[in-house]
Length: 201
Image 1 (tube, helix red, strand yellow):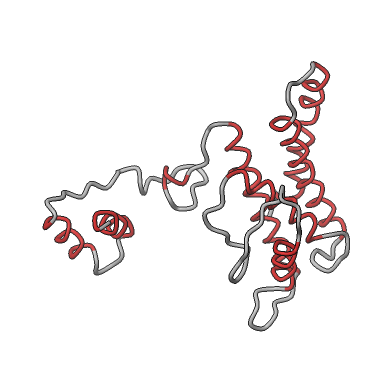
Image 2: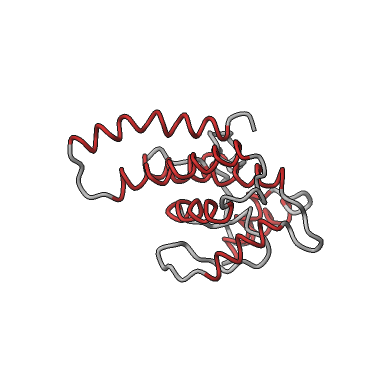
């Protein structure tokens, strides 16, 4: 436990703590070794170097790359329109949390949030897909959260196509030649919808 605490502290490199932590490590007969890749900028890793990078494996690339980014960018779009509420993050945040704790469908990812949902932590790759379903439902068809209809339609279309594409490729068991041809035709449509909704934010 002590070793883990020291290692995490050394990786954080918080000013004024490193020397003391190195001395603690020395007292335990440890020589701390910091992986040189820890701080190496790598892909879309959110500042965590190679350890936070999106995996190359296709399913995780899709979920931790495209779906996660679509989730974050959709929140940015909503935040640009949505009113802030005193002592709360936003009306949309309230709606998202209310949906999340009231529904009864066990297939939809459920989590009880303390305060705010935009910056979720420790979410498994498979859960981003479920969070996209929730975004679609919470945005809805009214102009409350994204009042510009053209923007709302582009976002809803991109999110929907991401989910359809996922189901076609990873949920359906077995693919006929017709399925594969449809997936082949759908791929550029999904990418274009994604680009239309989120490029230029």
